[in-house]
Image (tube, rainbow, N blue to C red; front, side, top):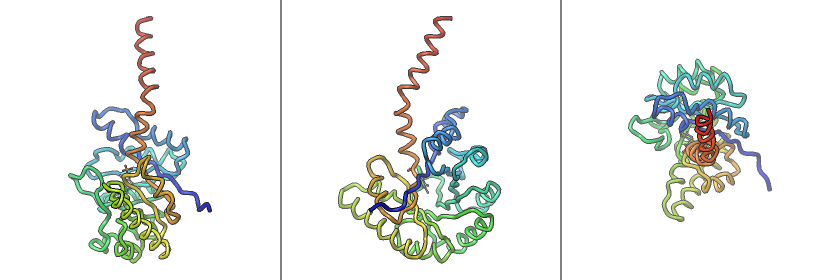
Length: 246
Ligand code: PXP
């Protein structure tokens, strides 16, 4: 039996990571986003980090202008970021935990510990017609707290499933995600998922009927580099040959 279609949010942060490594104009995450839109993505996801290590404010402003599909802005729950989101007004805002020294978002938000500020941020973003999701672990207590704080969307952190080492551990983590998705869905919460998903571990997550959206970045950007390598080399060779003909 077929269930409701599942949406894909393409995270283009890592195109910006490559650009920021050299502080060049390329590769442009906005161009990548437009190509993802053309390929059928339902949304573009970007994380404006406090340290601005990849996406910059200007990228978010341009994306809001040019995209026809939804923009999902991931931000830490800080006054600076909430104010920026209110100015941009993306379709969705995903509140994520953030630590300066981390390589990537390492775990879900602790909604229980930061209940009051999260509740306040959800209310002020929604007052600006921005739909809010909370990025949390597959944990029933966190889901209950998210619901009480007013969240009607959660994004379940799939990183622990993606990082599982053995088959048994993978099964266990997948089961946690299935149970959490069912629990949230029964409360009337819309369930999204993401982090660490790639070409070999996405199928099992996409089978979970309660999950309505996946946000995937690193694996897509990595694959795009390799799929595009042949054409990229051919184009620079053409330019070099042209130089010899002049
Ligand atoms: N969802 C959230 C909330 C994230 O923080 C990230 C990483 O920025 C992703 C999805 C995408 O993760 P990945 O790049 O591992 O696919």
